[in-house]
Length: 120
Image 1 (spheres, one colour):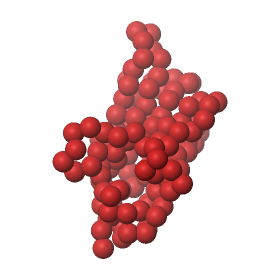
Image 2 (tube, helix red, strand yellow):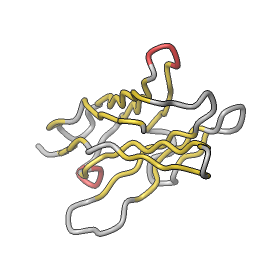
Image 3 (cartoon, helix red, strand yellow):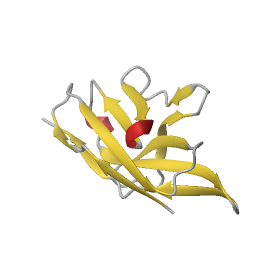
Image 4 (cartoon, one colour):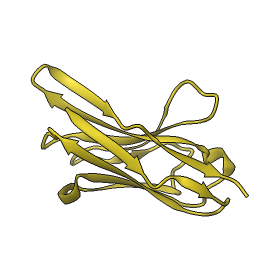
């Protein structure tokens, strides 16, 4: 089992920045795939924003490309999402996601999310 805890959300003015953190604990595999999603108010699905592939490219949704940056600190088992030039359309609950291979196959874990509100 892996536990994910997001933090860093809050209220920010348009044009501002926030850095979200996702701390992972538990049985973390040496190779895992981490990503950030968000779920806007009234929306049922979670949209993929950014994904880190070990040894591979970093992928971003077009809506956040050039504004958001995903990174990780393996020593701290923490993944970050730096968000710049925020707009009201970025208002959503943000979730981190971790996938890894386990004995029975691929397991997927979610955090509880952190709320980001962009408003003046």
